[in-house]
Image (cartoon, rainbow, N blue to C red; front, side):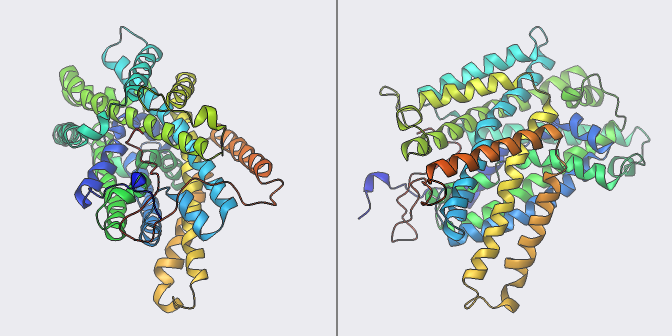
Amino acid sequence: MSDPAKKLIPQLNLAGLIVFGLSYMAPAVVIATFGVIATISQGATPMAYVFATLAMLLTAMSYGKLARRFPASGSVYTYARRTIGSKLGFLAGWIILLDYLFLPMVAWLIIGLFFSAQFPFLPPWAWGLIVIVFCTAMNILGMKVADRFNRFLLIFVMAGILCLVGFGMAFAGGSGVSPAVAMWPESTTFSLVAAGAAVAAYSFLGFDAVSTLSEEVKEPRKNVPRGIVAVVLSGGIIFVVSAFVMQWAHPSLEFADIDTAGFEVLNVIGGPVFADLVNSTVLIGGLASCIAVQASGSRLLFVMGRDGVFPKKVFGHLSEKFRTPTFNLVFIALIGLAGQFLSMGDATSLINFGAFLAFTIANICVFVLWWKNRSSMPVAMHFFGYMLIPALGIVVDLYLLFHLSPLALLIGGVWLAIGVVYLAFLTRGFTRPAPGLDIETAESDDTLTTTVIAPAHTP
C-alpha cells in the first residue's frame, strides 16, 4: 500500500510544463555563450544552433516515448533501470550527477562574468562568489524563488530577447552586410560547425528536466512528451534567431574577451544603455536559474544519500530547522567556487559530456524497449519512432560528444571510470543488483508515489 505522505499532486498543465522547461534553460544564455561558439565555429553561430537543435530534437523524441511509457521521476536513470537493468541504471544516474554537480558551477561562472561586464568594479570571480553565497543562502532557507517567479522572469527575459532581435536586425540591416555571411561564412567548415554545436548544446540543458516532473503534471503520459518536444523547438527557435541577429550585426571574430563577447555585441547594436538593459535580463533570469540548478543538484545528492548510494548520514542529512540538504548545498557551492577559474568553453564542454552520454543512453533505452516488446510492436509500424530516430540520435550525440574539448573528455572519462569502480564496490564485483533511487510507480498511472527529483524544487 502506498504512503499518502509521499504522493505528489498533479497540478501542472502543458503550458506550465513548457514555461518550466524554458525558464530552466534560461533563453538569454545564447547571449552569454555567443563569443565562445562564434570563435569555435568561425562565425557560424546560428548554424551551430541549428545543428544542436536538430540533435536535441532527435533525443527529445526518444525522451517523449520513454516518458509516455514510464511516467515517473528520475529521467534517464529510471528509463535505463526499467529497460536495461539496475547496473546501467546506476551508471546513468552517475552520469546525470556530473551534470547536476557542475551545471551550477557553469551558471555561476556565466553570471559572474556578465555581472563584471556591467559592473566592472569587481572581477568576475568576486561577483561569482557573491552570487554563490546568495544562492546557497536562499536554498538553505528553502525559498523557492525560481518556482514562484518562473512565469514573470520568463516574460522579462523574453522582452530582452525581443529587444535584441528588433534592434539587432535594424542595425544589421543598415550595415550593408549580407545575411548569408552570418549563416555560413567562408572561414567555416562542417567540422567547425559541429564543434560549435557541441558547445551550443549546453543552452538546451534543462529540456530533459521536464521529464522529472511527471508526477506533478496532469495527464503525464500525454503532456510530458509534448512538453519535452515543445521546449526543444521553442528554445531552438529563440537560440537560432538570436544567434543569427548577433552574428549578422557583428560578423567579425575580434572580441576583447570571448567570454563576454555577447555584451560587446549588445554595445555595438544599441550602445551602453541598451547593452546594460538587455544584459539585465541575462542577470535576472540567470540568477533564478542558478538557484534552481543548485537546488536540483542538492536534491539528487540527498535522494542518493538517503537510499544508500552515498553515505546516508552526510548526503542524506536534512537541516532540522529548514528541512533542506544543507551539506549538499554547501558541497555544490564549493565546486562552484573552484569553477570560477575555468574558461567558459571548458566549463560548458564539461557539462555537455554528461549530457551527451545520458542522451545516448536514453536513445538506447528506446530501442531496447522495442526489442523487449517486439512481439506486440511490429517493425513496419514502429521502425521510424523506435529504431530510426533513436539510431540517428545515438550517432549525433556521440558525434557531438567526441567534438568536445580534450579537457572535457578527460575529466568526463575519469568521472565515468570512477562510477564503474564505485559500482563494482557496491555490487561486490557486479555480482549483486545495483542500489537504486527510490523510484517506483504506484498501481495507478495518474497517482504516483515516488520521491521526485525536481530540478526547480527544494525538498
